[in-house]
Amino acid sequence: MNTPFELSLIAPAKLNLFLHINGRRDDGYHELETLFTFLNYGDELHFKLSTDTLISISGDTNGIALTDNLIYKAALLLQTHCKVNLGAKINLTKRLPMGGGVGGGSSDAASTLLALNTLWNTALSLDELADLGLKLGADVPVFIKGKSAIAHGIGEQLEYLELPPKWYCVVFPNQHVSTAQIFTHPDLKRDTPKLSGDWQQQILTNDCEPLVKKLCPEVEKTLQWLLKYAPSKMTGTGSCCFVEFASQVQAQDVLANLPHTWQGFIASSVSTSPAHTELAAIIDK
Ligand SMILES: C[C@](O)(CO)[C@H](O)COP(=O)(O)OP(=O)(O)OC[C@H]1O[C@@H](n2ccc(N)nc2=O)[C@H](O)[C@@H]1O
Ligand SMILES: Nc1ncnc2c1ncn2[C@@H]1O[C@H](COP(=O)(O)OP(=O)(O)OP(=O)(O)O)[C@@H](O)[C@H]1O
Image (cartoon, rainbow, N blue to C red):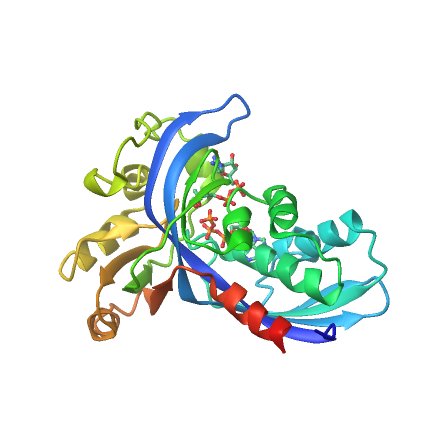
């Protein structure tokens, strides 16, 4: 491969198909077990190499200050860690709702690490990138590794598995939920026993759901409305809710009937992150 000067990469959404909280560590982080799948839908990032060391972001920055943006933080982390004397001009097309539980910020950070590791020729392994990514957020490693998995620990210990592809309708009830607020709330259920035996034979829930429904009536309304179509669930710490189907038309039907006050999208799930599929195609050229 000739090292490219620019490249585009998706930052896909994730869904937590279940999320069990098993306890709280002394540092405040929670021990959890959660099933991650990736969606063929996400933010779009474009990276252009620059020969100075500046890192800039244009496009849909949505009022996030440059130095708070997880894209910038990821780029700076890799630049510093590998002592890179190059920079990057990064453009963001934001499609994933922020504070929606679909992992947009973490996925942006992961795709930035993956793309710049190629453009800057830093050649870190996925394990090394995932270790760096964990400094930015508990969800970053799964996006770096790019395979559907049950995560243990705080979300960084990954047990990979293939999942059959499904179609999802994901609904954002126009309410942003702060992950930190949910994890610090006294009423959060934190005592689900760890999975043992075949996880597919067990009752799988999202332990954040009862609390988020109480704090955000709009989430409760969304889950109720979706129930007309299929069993509804919330992803991560909310606020997005989703229903699963075998076919695209069923997911499309839900989206077509969505009340105007909410936003939604449909997407198919994939066991390999589309960021990895796209990057492999670029590297193979
Ligand atoms: C709940 C999930 O969305 C499931 O996918 C993630 O585990 C959250 O991952 P994330 O957004 O990357 O999380 P971070 O940015 O690391 O942390 C956000 C906030 O959630 C809390 N947090 C996060 C993950 C975890 N296992 N326990 C926690 O208590 C942290 O205290 C922090 O205040
Ligand atoms: N590039 C970015 N995209 C989205 N959010 C960002 C970004 N950079 C920083 N943030 C901050 O991170 C917060 C959480 O963003 P994100 O959209 O990842 O939430 P989430 O989908 O609920 O994540 P998770 O499910 O991982 O908890 C935002 O409210 C925002 O302040």
